Image 1 (cartoon, one colour):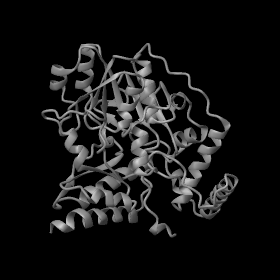
Image 2 (spheres, helix red, strand yellow):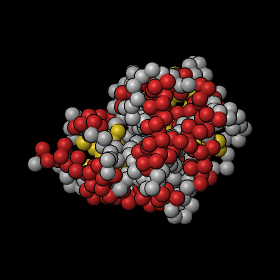
Image 3 (spheres, helix red, strand yellow):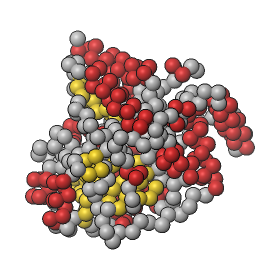
Length: 401
């Protein structure tokens, strides 16, 4: 299959251009935080953050109504209670509601930087300080940037991030500590098999998307042979090599089931593999920031003044690198399912944790239905971007004419 016909990758994949350009970006990165540890995932980082804050049974953690289930599962794994709060039209917590309704025994407030666009954090920080509540700054969407006067990840008592959303790694997260007196956890080293698998998955993902010219066929052939041999040893028929498992590359139903489950505690306490750590800390970063900003601007222009859709947040702050482009769609179904089936790199947080309430002044539940998250990462080609726009036009704009 030619590269032009391959589905666009939903997340970054390694290629020769991964290693082009200056290492440092023009904006801060959480990887430069002075007190951080690399984890196996952003979800594991949340679990470790909660453990650092001694969150346990009967404690309350405040979470936004607009969320990925991976924000909630660590709370539930530790036996704590999740109380959901409303967000405003920019994604900031409605502190007036929190002041009136937050339980007295609240232990922590989690505030995300949605879509990689930094949220103002000074008011949330002051609200937490006034009540003795820990602030968890969720930077899963925001590896790079500044929130007000501080670097991303500098506002929370603890901060977390996800490496897979910004770097071509099969796994990875970050836990960073800002509060004095907290100690970074000691993580169990990855096994030799896990080390080899991570390195091979990085190469396989790049070759699966034809990004390693000169090696694509060789790498894909090796994985096909490995899959065939494994199948024969198990008594099955040989088949094509499966794509490496990676958050964001799973079937959507499998992804939802995995996110809604309680966390694998041994995996959450395992250190990141060396290959994933090397990729995330050594690849040049300026290309990542500049390409994502350029792609976000491309979508903003493409969907300007179009019926039935609009950019949720068209103004891209100067000091950030977006994770996705949030597109508000008036009537997203059934087009969203068709886009997923066609391999368009799009997602939606429409599977909320059971029991999320309808709250006054809340934008979160509406976002979960109407907002599509279009990939805008650095490894999308111009053709990929045009195909995404074409599918949105075909499904959502052309019928409205």
